[in-house]
Length: 156
Image 1 (cartoon, rainbow, N blue to C red):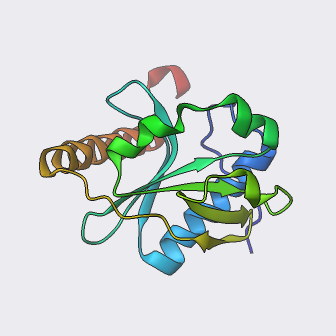
Image 2: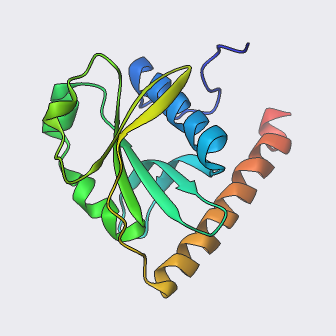
């Protein structure tokens, strides 16, 4: 089994956050048949930790919190909810889940996998926003894949 952490990272995430990211992305793929991206810029200037896209075009955003301090300092998570059908917090097993609002979804994860502890309320995206998100994610995926396949002359 491959236990390495992701090779694609911008260096801002802690080791704990990267482990949670990996576990959540595995959960999305294996249990929900979602494709996911990490570190996605949104139209409002924010950047979400994970965005997952389901077979029917449903959009989930997952905000990773690796510590109590991380949660208390970063209160911009409300600004992600306009870009998804469901919003979740994800936490490592050692972090007390009672710090998170009961009105939001909650996932516990480590580098091996994850489990949804509390489902997120469903608030469907408006059609125009969903279309814009799908176009953005298709382009982002192609752009990232191109960067892997052809890093450019300076990297050759």
